[in-house]
Length: 168
Image (cartoon, helix red, strand yellow):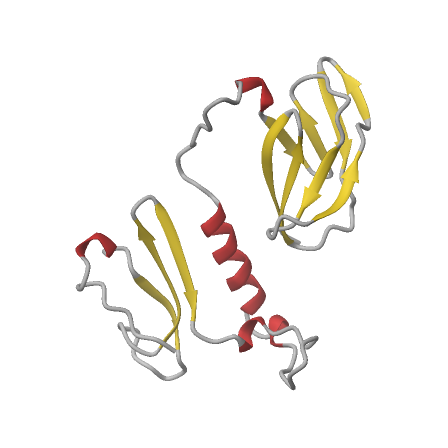
């Protein structure tokens, strides 16, 4: 658990606790989950590794991922951290490189013969997808339907990386 001190830095006035240790007052101490905006970024903190343990590690932790709302808490924090309320333009990329997603299809708003590559948050490529069809000036890709809940990026030489968040 940890303690937050929002009064120490006035620019961190959004610092908030969300989940506290059992039977603790909901104030600035004994916090298990907290979030904050910092400048133009965001920070999320979880003071214990046990809630995210899925039982597959080398320790004797149980599968806490499915207990209570642990899974939803982690996925919601990741979603909040990875989304932006304001669009940020990347210089040097023309507007026609934008892509839309309608799961399980990735749709480029232009014709393309380029493959797309799915990467994880660490940048490791784990799947490549060739165009499924091209119609009406758009290119359609069929994504694997067994993608596990997580955050992925679709990348190809002719488009900016597209973040894909899967919730199930």
